Structure formats: C-alpha cells, structure tokens
Length: 126
Image 1 (cartoon, helix red, strand yellow):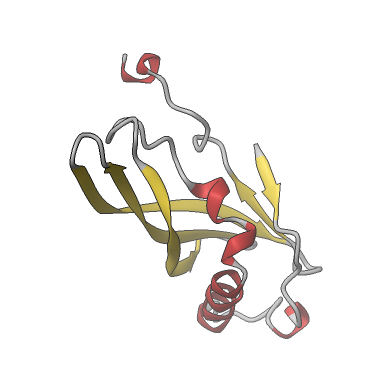
Image 2 (cartoon, rainbow, N blue to C red):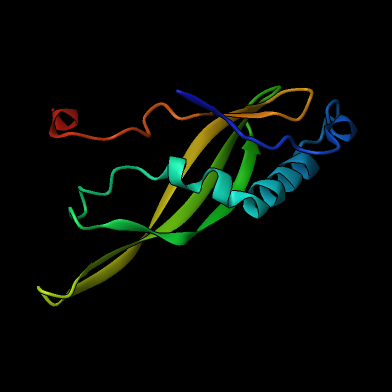
C-alpha cells in the first residue's frame, strides 16, 4: 500500500538535480516534521505485541532522512507508546524506532511505501 502525502514539497526544482542530497534530505526532514499530523497515524504499527492496551502517544519525531537512490529515500522516525489501566493500577510507556521508504517525484510529491505497516497477527510469528 502506498500513501501519497497530501502536501507537495515546495521549491523542489532547486534540489532536483543536485548531486549532494544532504540539503534536500534536511529540507524533507523539516517539511515532514512540520506536517507530521498528516502521516503519523499511518506509520504506527500494531502495538498489541507490547500489550493489548498500548496506544500511540503524540509526538512522532523524524530522526533522519537518507537517500537510497535517484528518487528513493528512507525516513527514520521514533514515537512514544503508552499503556494505562486505572483499574489494574498499570501505567507504562516506551519509545519505538522505525523506518519507512518513500519516493519523491519532480513535482515534490512524496509517496510512502506502507507495506508492512498493516495489522499484525500471530500468523506473522510463524
């Protein structure tokens, strides 16, 4: 499954043919972080392996973006999960790190490859 980011990266023409991808990666990182609410919930994997009550707490952080090829990139990110059950007197939280590949076309459109971000089941353990 692919997800096209609803906002294109502005001023993509400045970077489209640059040999050094570092400035573009930093711009992409800032752009996605500023618009994180448009994708964060799509990047949360099934947390039931931690606990059936585990859920995502806001605050996803883009750690870095690195180039993989001509128009292909990999985004490293982290987010907090939380468990709360007042009846059981249970409260816990943790930090997960993950990564996702995406492509960037000439118009500044980002397309994220969300294969593997669907619900997990016990069948995945076999």
